[in-house]
Amino acid sequence: MRAIVYRDFGTPDVLRLEEVEKPAPRDDEVLVAVYAASVNMFDWYMVRGKPFVFRLVLGPGRPKPLGVDLAGVVESVGRNVTRFKPGDEVFGTGRDKSVRSKRGSFAEYVSTYDEMLALKPRNVTFEQAAGIPIAGLTALQGLRNHGLLRRGQKVLVNGASGGVGTFAVQIAKAFGADVTGVCSTRNVEMVQRIGADHVIDYTRENFTTGAVRYDVILDIVASQSWPDCRRMLTDNGKYVAVGGPPRRALPLMLREPFTRGKLVTFVARANLADLNVLRQLIEDGRVTPVVDRTYPIEETAEAVRYVAAGHTRGKVVITVR
Ligand SMILES: NC(=O)c1ccc[n+]([C@@H]2O[C@H](COP(=O)([O-])OP(=O)(O)OC[C@H]3O[C@@H](n4cnc5c(N)ncnc54)[C@H](OP(=O)(O)O)[C@@H]3O)[C@@H](O)[C@H]2O)c1
Image 1: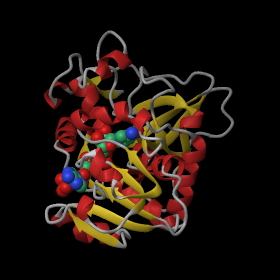
Image 2: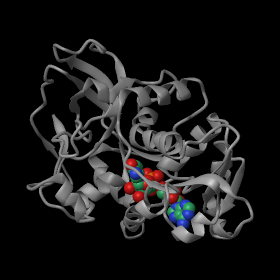
Image 3: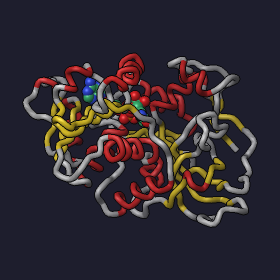
């Protein structure tokens, strides 16, 4: 099969499309013919091998196969798998439970654990479905598990126009929250269209100087200081730090223990139950994945370069078939 391969960390130019051995599913695995895969900032960090802590987490040796998110069709199943059968249309993550996984979804086939997959929402394309897993799970878990968002509360999504942000705005609306999205001028209309009640254009206004206080701030870009964000929270409010450039996002992890639970950092976890929550939200028409661009697998380097620049509007998708 063809897959994206790289032998050294570096710029996206290190990525090559090569022939590699097609995987075979183990007993508790599903072999998926990948139709589309989506690019996350995580993939760029994998290519770059930075921040350096990534290399420690990934373990010694060569770079690992690239790509997490996927949508495709079940080709065959291991003998313990009862949930899926050949021909099922699925979406999910192509890595196993370990971050040191030796699989990657930027390939024609991936063998992955059955609990990392769910049936694809019937009302979206494979390209849209491929954009769901990491971004959707991060938005869902950030708002629900860490922000403890409840109906009627006020939530601010900083970075509302990106992969995670476009899911977060829609999921927060589906939960019955009053949603403020922060984005740049060119994305104001899109963020309104996906359901934000209020939009702050960060090129004109700093959200940390406004009068409104928020029950949850889901911060995907870490553009403002923690003390400034803390002032914008209600008494029981939570600031959920999702990401941003490592030099600004990593120090937030060190602060977390000293914030009496007001600042929360987390890493999203793929699991079947949450993939199914996302599928239901999408089939109910309450969430629609936003796809910015698609690239054929031959142009994966271009796709990663575009994501690395940090200005995507929704998700960037690689088409494999
Ligand atoms: N904790 C986790 O488990 C987890 C999971 C997934 C992702 N992440 C992290 O979350 C971050 C974002 O991921 P993503 O996939 O959503 O990224 P993305 O798709 O690249 O989105 C970034 C968005 O932020 C906007 N933006 C840039 N500067 C901004 C600012 N100052 N204020 C408001 N918006 C701004 C960009 O639009 P403009 O440039 O037009 O403003 C762009 O639309 C990454 O750092 C990633 O590593 C963490």
